[in-house]
Amino acid sequence: MKPPSTLTRSARSAVLVTELLMAALVLYAVSELVLRGAGSLIVFSAVVSVVTAALLWHQRHLLRGLFAGRAVSADDGWLRRYRLLYAVVIVAGLLLWGVYLLALLVPGAVGTPQALLLILIAWGASLYATYGTAVALARLFTAPEDAALRASAREWLGRNALASGVFAVMNLVPVQGTERGPLVLTAAYALVAVLDVAWPLLTRAALRRP
Image 1: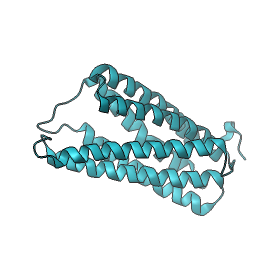
Image 2 (image 1 turned 120 degrees about the vertical axis):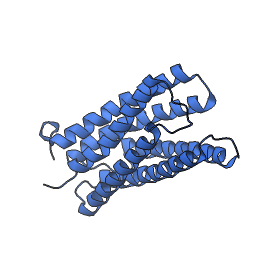
Image 3 (image 1 turned 180 degrees about the horizontal axis):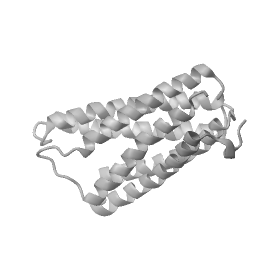
């Protein structure tokens, strides 16, 4: 078991980026409410961002234990809440995904249906990779020394980073015929996107065997 002071650089970086992502999500949620108003979808999105920040708080605690070689029991309170929060975030993401899919199916409701279709495909892949990562990490938290679980988690973390990166780029690249949001909100989203790609990459590196 490693004390916190002997964690590898990538492990410490993964924990730090997780903490930064928590703060960035809260910043984005507040920015969205202030700059875009309190519409139902905007409020729902902001709430999901805050719930995701709470999820990351639990993930941070569990990652520190994982990197130090400490296993948790299957009924550990932190792990149970982690699983519950991840389920809430995934279901909320699927609900939002479904709303935009319905908008795509309504003729004339979307100005650039082709662009939205591509975004929905990337979004769906990101949700799938997020779910797979959550399951793989939850298993690894209970058995940090299991080589097969570690390899599975590293594979899913790589897929998560790739899917999140593609989804972020598609949301940030301007599409002809669509209206861009406020610059501050775009910058806040870009910060979240960068950190959302960074944490799985750093966690994956930290799980590499020496």
